[in-house]
Length: 345
Ligand SMILES: Nc1nc2c(ncn2[C@@H]2O[C@H](COP(=O)(O)OP(=O)(O)O)[C@@H](O)[C@H]2O)c(=O)[nH]1
Ligand SMILES: [Mg+2]
Image (spheres, rainbow, N blue to C red):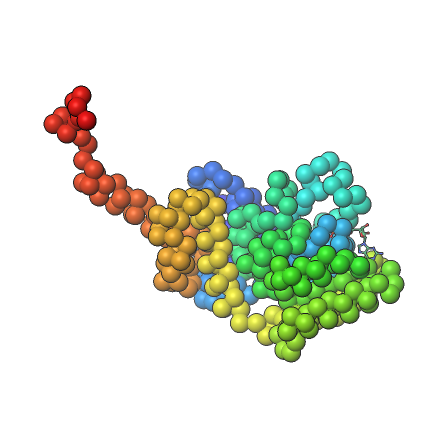
């Protein structure tokens, strides 16, 4: 099965193409990367004739906040609505055996026979929070076939920013009494998410209080009115509470979103991150710095996928490097014998 064939199947919303897609996009061999580029081209906005229709939801929060348990509840709610769901979890518990990183951890529960669901956990490796380039590309590709694509990352701050670069809607999950998140917002360290969820409402008054405190903090940041951050409380353990409201809040955010604009910015930001990750400061300097790179990305066809944007940056880099080699060869010709200092100085 070629990358282009997989991409075509995704475009036709054939969910059975998803596992092979994940494997291909995670592979780093040269031939697989070529196939991956062909796949991504098939599900690019240019090929789809518009943005992929799936809703990309980023879910992030500190370890133990209740993300996985919440996602199990959301999964059932979405499936009950007949929506197909892909969940990409960046899992820090796989760093240590038995998920002992922070004690008691839930897994996302689902029926393995259900063909409308795809769950993939990727080990976070050394990175707590950050997104692998493959996760970004995978989410964008799967959004062509699935109704909902969730990316779960762990952490606050950086994790939130990175997931905001790819998601249509960003959900930050906090548990009752977690004052640190409040402090982050007050200090302006975190971007405000689209939806804030306080979990474990069944534990009592503390959840309501945390919700009030978060609302007060958001008000003090001037975040009120349409389009501002919603704060919801949920209980994810049976009997679930607040899940329907959360599903509705996510739908509402997406319905009011300029998806084309957000996705275009996501692809450009992702391309810049991937390029800088691959080629470092030297690569950025070669294309004339970060600003110049951004300008170059803005000049590209808005229908290009992220990988194609990375390729455009790489071509510019290679052209610049080749030109520099030629011009420095003229500017600094290899010393001829007469130029060579011979003893005197
Ligand atoms: N009482 C209660 N416990 C919860 C709830 N949601 C999650 N938990 C518990 O909190 C712990 C961490 O949950 P988990 O989903 O693994 O958190 P994650 O690390 O953010 O994915 C587990 O022991 C869950 O059973 C909830 O709504 N109520
Ligand atoms: Mg988890």
